Image (cartoon, rainbow, N blue to C red; front, side, top):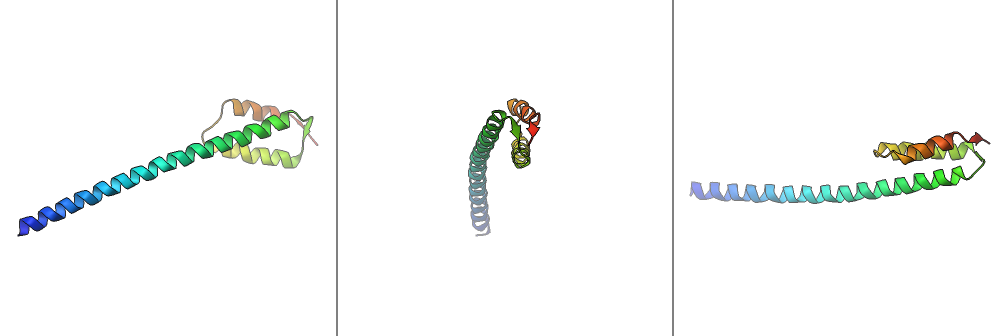
Length: 96
């Protein structure tokens, strides 16, 4: 009887651990989807703001503050490249 109880406990433990592993994998997959979506939104917002500001003759303090927030979020997600060049060009604009 003792062996049967041990076998049942071992099987139940294995099933539980397997279920937890599957659950964690699903959560990690969903987190990746959210991460990708957040990066896409940050990229779009940052690039739109840069393109808008580059069409202007000057930049207001509020626009600069907003751009800096977008830039910080954009870079904190590990994104850079072309965005950095656009950001630098925006910073060269005269303040109004």
